[in-house]
Image 1 (cartoon, rainbow, N blue to C red):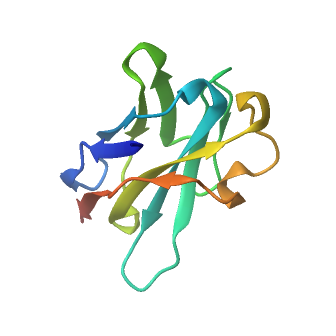
Image 2 (cartoon, rainbow, N blue to C red):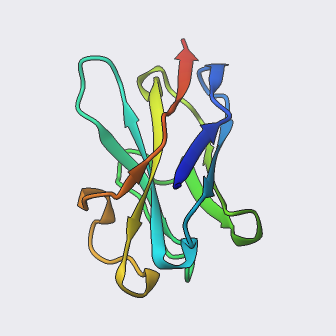
Length: 128
């Protein structure tokens, strides 16, 4: 049974930092890319980062580039999202998702792909 479990969310003041974790079980991550997405009330789901588990290559949209950093610990089957300089508009439920990729690689905009597995999400609230 595939499971993705997010943790690390919480309440933080604007300008602060949080590190989210996505722990995966039931799948061989080497063949996957892991994406982080966020869903705010009344807004469309937005992808904020993606990492290839096989080679560590990453992708970020302009909205978070320079503030967010995604990384992985293959030994722990865990992907992290380090979020810095947080803004109130970063408030959302953050979800991680896994997508099977050819050779575990990412290309183009992997945040537009159809992801195979999703976690339940963790709430991030940034106060002004």
